[in-house]
Length: 170
Image (cartoon, rainbow, N blue to C red):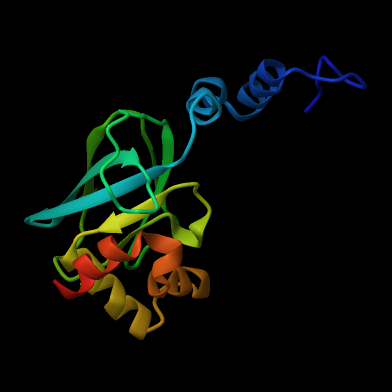
């Protein structure tokens, strides 16, 4: 990548523009949502099965350490990666609204679905009880990478403890 500001200091908009040109992705509009507000998002997953398809309702809110609902209305453009059982490469979507539905074709009712594989995204994920149960089975059979198993088994890397235990035990 050749930068028009080579050997000079670049301003943030110049960096985003160059990265956008090189990648073909809307880097500037995505990064504005991350640099113009405080905090980071919590992505909630609600799944429903319809025949051979799994529909994921993804919703976002501001992550709070206490687990209390944030009323700020913060909205990020979140690059989401979705990995499912039997797939080597994740599906990539951009969650750029409060909520969106993603359709995964050919997913059996017992297959696990994991957001943020590799724990690379700057967002936390809250799964529903059924999704968490399927992921726990994948952990016990080592179907997930070591980093994904660690992330799922460590409440402090996932969610506030109240949300974690509410999904697991109640």
